[in-house]
Image (cartoon, rainbow over all chains, first blue to last red; front, side):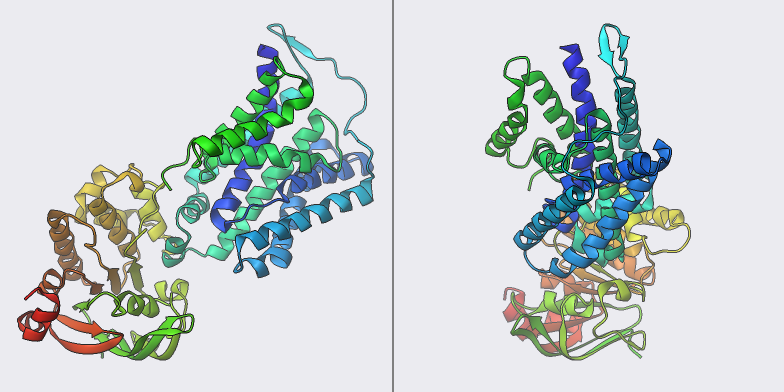
Length: 283
Length: 234
């Protein structure tokens, strides 16, 4: 059981990072961004390009991939989403499904459909207090914690971070206060995409890279964001942890194959019982 | 020359005009109150001045500069701030953070200005770390006014600052409006409690159906029989 909790924390870190960006997008742009999972995949595959194809060191590959994913997200927003922003949320949602399909098939076109890994061979796990953990997983855990703390500090302490939270609270009032809302939208994409890319890379490090990896992550990250109340980034982190832990712990009782369904069941139950989310305030 | 001069303003939403040629002026150091029945276009007037509603015709001149058609982000930089009637705070941000957002475009240190606001509204200093969304309506109104004042505006627009407040808080808020005015900020406000609003105002405008009906000093309007019959309850 402790072993499952450990895996749950690792997976939860990955989900949380995806859910934070998604929450900001939903909140600030009223945008259910269905291509968010595929941005995770993009980050993961760009890292593969720099690390394996070009042979750069891992840290540099990760940094470049995160930056490029953020740039790609801003460009996608300018080209595809921005012209549609004044229409309805449903249209944006469908546009993002289109972007998701394009991203996934571009990835498949360049890198093929077969699963790939950053590093071949078997890692010998450390045994700590009877728990098995691979060195890569230690890295993932550390990175996830560091990133979550960094995001928290950014949102809590910097002027831009506070303005992002203000935008999430009340877009009109932010504009009336003179906050440059368009610049904040760019920031939202940079932050959201960078975190998604990091999450995708971690997922790739933990398991393997597949073109559909992002698409498969979409449900858990949406479930986490909804669980967190779709309002505040901190709720998204808690939601991510709850989803991941329940998915891992469910394997004690039911077949592992049904693991993804757990996120879905949780999301449906929550929407029935408490539609504003666990941590959402009054509407 | 007037600080703010609105002439022949026509504005509205979609296909419908709400304002049919409104004229209004606010002079330096004045409190000006706009009263009128529901649907007279008071809020629309304020939103058009602040660039939140598209102006179809007419001119808005602020400090000698034509600001017709500018957006809120440009107007706010010229020294005019606006406090909406509803949703006028950032609920999940603390009082301090709300004020900091008010100072977003201010150059340099805003701490001293924040201290000034805490002097004006002592309750906010006590609750500086409280989330604005958890405060009472009257306290939120003070957060909202303080937020708008963080930029040292020449003119502040207040849309029904006492709406939904208890009589005690309403009175307190209007007292603060007078105090703000004494600090050298001109005030243009809408007030649903016409009697209380006009009582603290230098001049007032009566608006009906998107047109000017009357304008005079606050005291004269209070004494005016027609105004009394229309809005002051007899």
